[in-house]
Length: 171
Image 1 (cartoon, rainbow, N blue to C red):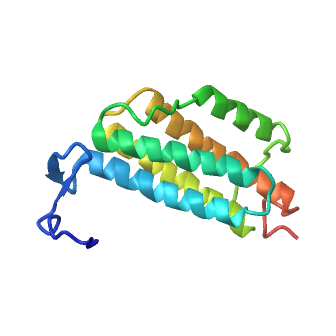
Image 2: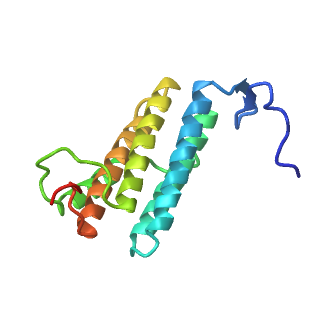
């Protein structure tokens, strides 16, 4: 089977439903950006492969992102996975409880894994905006909103975990 079909050369693509749409369709943007987020999240999981439990947890997030991507491509029910916003909020609260109180704005950089969390966070925010443009509201966009918060607190926890000051220029 060939990877290329030449059917998209004219700027059209097929959704999972079989419908042909423009590659600029908001649904294509939503699932494409979610796919990008899933790729960066998988990279983060691979980078954190030595951290017990964390890699598995982030792998679970990739599976949920795959469900969100399916939802955007079909505008129908997902693969049966539940987008548990409350569970994600619990994880955020648990991580944040271990962190020192912020006294300044967070400056990005200082450790490659924390920086990768910020890449995931910013792509997640873009995926949320794309989902909104595609007409999604409710649990899907709430989940993406919390997921970006999760990546933010995870980046902060990694900075603490690796004993890196959040202000790398500070002497």
